[in-house]
Image 1 (cartoon, rainbow, N blue to C red):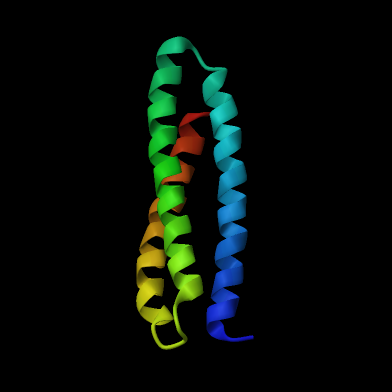
Image 2: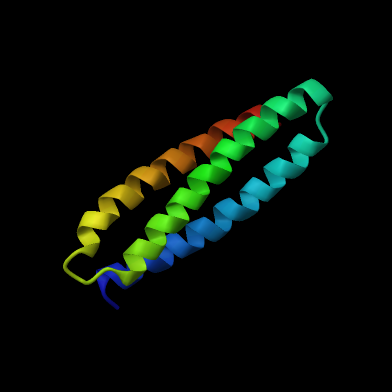
Length: 95
């Protein structure tokens, strides 16, 4: 398995994990008080946007050649870190 394929598998697993985590946070937000719910929903929209951005970058990575994927990987890594930190932050506030 090439490094690109290995990276793609890892990315797919994380996207699935984060999608599930986002659904849990959405459920918690929906059960919150009305004023908190609005705040949580705004934050969740931002996280969902980051997740969609990561999915788009994943799709570009899938179609990239072996030579170009390293360049795309840098953008994927940045989006990955942003989403990861956002989810951690949201999860701590939604407890």
